Image 1 (cartoon, helix red, strand yellow):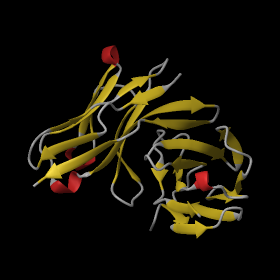
Image 2: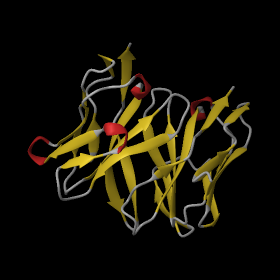
Image 3: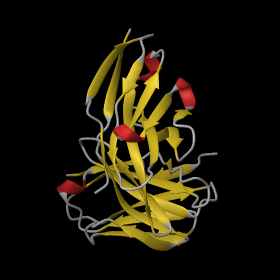
Length: 113
Length: 115
């Protein structure tokens, strides 16, 4: 009965590779997000999708491409991975008419070697 | 520009003692304010939120927070800390954007609990 799930939980890869992180929510929410938490624990929003439409894109390099096949899924694809992409990536979801609370997934720890 | 400041990087309290974590925000309108907790290796869990109304809000796990507009603050409190409260605490302000909104987080406060 997990509300927001992410796969994989850990991802270790070499520089230059392409990787994807998947996110699914079973809360019936219409808005999903990606946040990045760096090594100093600082959290910053990357993207937001509402009903499969990109709403927020916070000056993220275009190597990062979110894709939302439906309201319940928001995947993050990263091309040409760099050392600086190492971080924990959190997916979240909310309901626009539901009070603005965002529910977070468990995170994906990406390590680029 | 919107921002959130958590002035304390670390706080250590003894189990059973009271706790106050500070949060100051900068936002042009009435803010939506949140406190989240992150246990080691875990995601973020919402402790409480303020949208409007009563400025003292109650949350889960015995936490409460008070919104003070004059001080631009939203401090988190707990009267008696338990060892399981040791975690990272994040204050955030919700900034509406079109049909969505983003959370702007503070840098976090790590709570350590002495036995």
